[in-house]
Length: 117
Image (cartoon, rainbow, N blue to C red; front, top):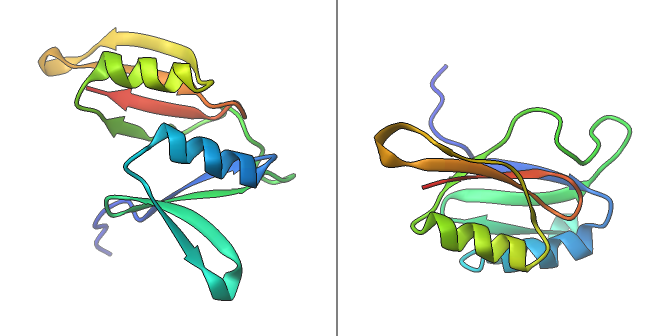
């Protein structure tokens, strides 16, 4: 088996329509996509599909495990942007290798967005 790259990131929320709008603002470079045959809207960021899906009894929304970290050009600007649209600083910022920093921002549904830059 050869693993190539991340194909999609699923984010579980209680209100899919509101979360799609929020994530479109959070990631302004994201391109809205629609699969008509499945009545499914999602966002494309580079080669990664960001799929906003309903939370349920198997996967709730919130901070509970793995966090995807997004590389950003301007770390402080990225934090300020996410906080300005309703995100909350959750962990960090922390200094890491090569002069970089990292942190986690919680979305309005409690999910963590990792930033690294």
